[in-house]
Image 1 (spheres, rainbow, N blue to C red):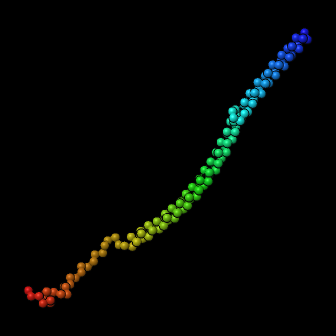
Image 2 (image 1 turned 90 degrees about the vertical axis):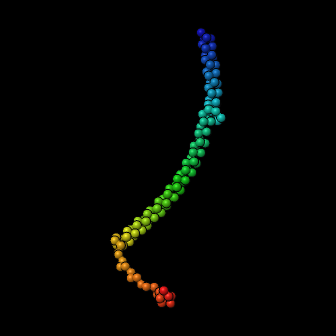
Image 3 (image 1 turned 120 degrees about the vertical axis):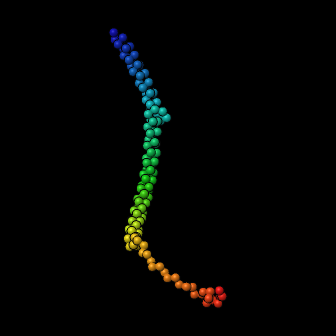
Length: 123
């Protein structure tokens, strides 16, 4: 009986050893940098770095665009104020002019300085 128990114990130890060998090979492939999770983690890490750089560049561009837009908006507001002032002044000028044109008195017709008689022309 002891012999059978020793054989079964040795077979179990060999089976566990083989199982550990297979698991170690799988873990090596799983953690390798070219394939498996290690490669995926390395690739994702480099992509995160690239995205971080792209995000920083986009934030700088957006800040510059916001600054330009703010300046343009301020200029447009100032120009709108000037236009409003000019329109108000134009309305004031139109209000000062009479709406009905003043009828001017007909001008007297004056004779020309030189007439045919005074120029010595015979009729």
